[in-house]
Length: 182
Image 1 (cartoon, rainbow, N blue to C red):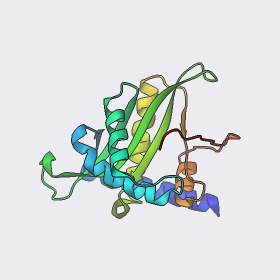
Image 2 (image 1 turned 90 degrees about the vertical axis):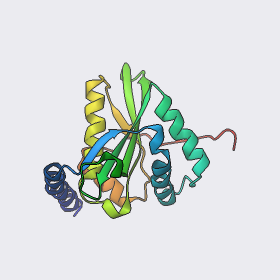
Image 3 (image 1 turned 30 degrees about the horizontal axis):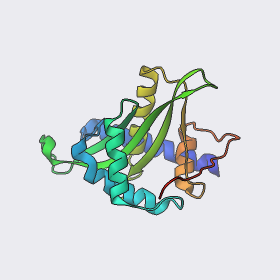
């Protein structure tokens, strides 16, 4: 049953990736400061799903600015031109993913932490998440990162199936946290 769902996800991604590439109406690029408002809207959707987080525009804006201005982080965005003209000013952000680079003693070098993968709810199941994940993976390989890890809400079955379909495996580790400040 799970394998059938994973195969369905992969088959849909393959079909839809061909459409995206043929139409060339989806582009993946690095986020800039000009993208912050649209990214905050996507994070609002994401944090509405995840029980451990609460949407807060000012906090998300501050975090996004830090990531964009950091040498050890990057945000990739998926943009779509909805009016089918070749005018980049009409592109709307429909998805995002962030990558933070850390040093692992276990791996003996740089590793990546994938966070904040979210696709606009009206644009899901069209291969955009797959395209963003592939972009992050290619970036990791090009920059000699040794591992890519992520956290996912344990109750978000669709996300868990999606990651499993991309060959991400569960580990024996669990996430613990302690908050400081607010």
